[in-house]
Figure 1 (cartoon, rainbow, N blue to C red):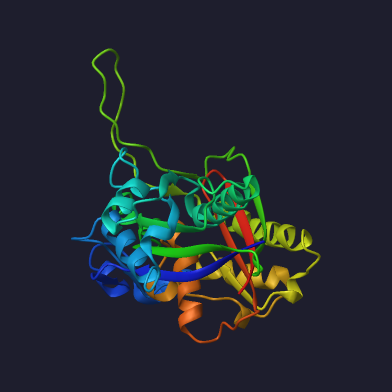
Figure 2 (tube, rainbow, N blue to C red):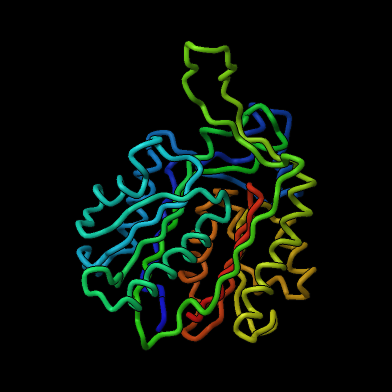
Length: 328
């Protein structure tokens, strides 16, 4: 039994912020940013909500697919529009998915791959029960973010990295397909607190509490070391489950955190850089949305062929990492 991708969508906000425009607000240059990150521009939502981005990407992914056949919606995000209702519930209503079960997950930049893992498990588990009422035929897995709302725009070490956007994949339970071949999920304790972003809650009247919003923080050097090692670990771990090696992979689709991280990971894994989908130049780091957005770019490039082996890798706050091997 296979869980395959039958649709994919992507949405970016209209507003583009170039490196030169950023240089008007902080002490930086286009050359400095490109050399350290590979990023030339990012999209920032000025009128669009996270729901707007997710719904638009979902509509594209669902083109030609009966919406009543969608049984599950999983949204990965660290920047939901509301604490409740969930982003998934809002997508279900806005897109019009009457039969879907919907919920959110937070696995930071690994979120989309975690979503694939969860959706595959639920879809296969439901089918194994043999229940017509519980069986899940199709699912949406979505990564959507508005990181511009949690970015420290006066810190040139971090604000240059982030952007907004959404990516969506439609999964189908097809016994005759291979699709997702394996997944490998791992969490690591962030003992040095290298990635964090404080929630913004109302302070209760019963005790003194500093509820001053604290923007997204990361320790670049520590994240770099973690990311390179974690990408290799989860990819190799997923491949070993199915008796394959890194050389068997046709395309690597990593989380687009930093161009240098992708280059270093390719070198560590002994794989040519031209096997890696790199989309960071025009859309920057969009956390949980980067993997589906990069996968969308790879498909639209015409390079991805039926039967190709694709490795998707995410890594991020928590610390967490995830890999998924897919036969296209």
